[in-house]
Length: 152
Image (cartoon, rainbow, N blue to C red; front, top):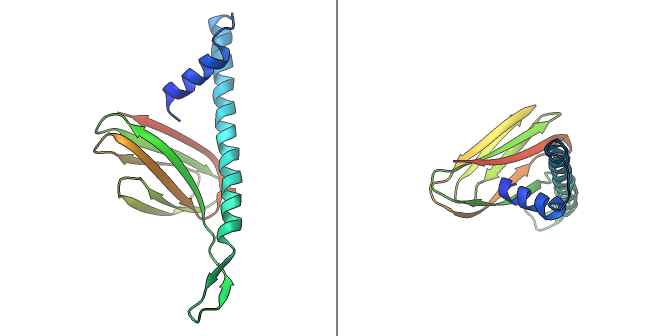
């Protein structure tokens, strides 16, 4: 998530509280953790919903309907690139091996097979604008964390 958006959200919720700098820092760290957990849970629920939908049926070569042998799970992020040359980073942690395909929203698609542990994926944008980043996972149940960050 964009840092300015999170800061503004925190200030709108807690901006009127009278507290020491240390207490506000503690509250902000707790707030960031809660936001990350909510995003993770939302991702898992969306992935489970997509799995049910994609695991339904597909037509076979002879027109008969058969079970889909390879359901997919996807995550979509909407990002804003404010200036050319910005890089978007997506850090994904896992407890086991997973495959991921990234569609960066600018026509570039990349596939990374056999990822395990903590992986950082990045993409450099040549032009500013709004982009829909889509990540398709082979198995979301092994994903333990997802962190997004943009740097110039």
